[in-house]
Length: 250
Image (cartoon, rainbow, N blue to C red):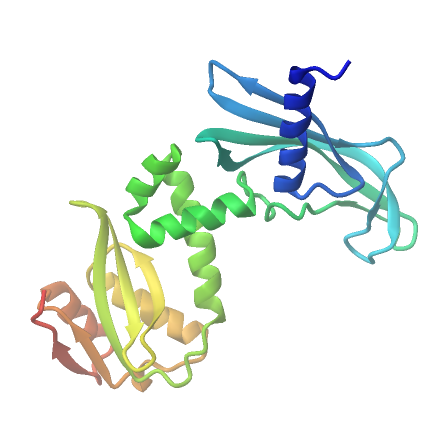
């Protein structure tokens, strides 16, 4: 008999399938709600003998073994949501390798789904990291790991051959705690480099970043900063040829 409880369970199951974009050979096997933890737990698996694309050559290969992994996903109805998945390794007869199958919902070695990390980055762009961590009910150390992954990836892809004028600014995750120094291309109005800390050492790290990309420090003709003695010393040591412009607006 089709009861109201059956109908409710069916609707919830279908909603999560759509939200997670579950595709074969993956199956959403179980959904449970932990009243004490106030969290959803979603369990995904695959049928015995299921085939996955080999990560090396792309040909279909059967699961060799599997390992249970867990990710935190976006909240549903303000409750934390966790995915528990048996992730396989495949034995490919074409390339003769046993390889872990990548999952489309998370990057390698992350404990969060891509959707969660995207939301976390949006929050961290609008508020201090510690505030975003409180909003997401996560430890700030984990938020900093997400932040560094995407910021470092973005900085590595930036083209720096035309950079001549930079501006330096610092911000903190909260008063007196964990500073970040930003280096901005004045002409393009984009952030070129972000590093934890403040003071003259950040200038040396930016110079090293330029060097790693084959850009000589002498290319920087002008540096705009506030009246911080530490910034001034850092410019003198790392970019002695640059003209210094002081920003008195702060």
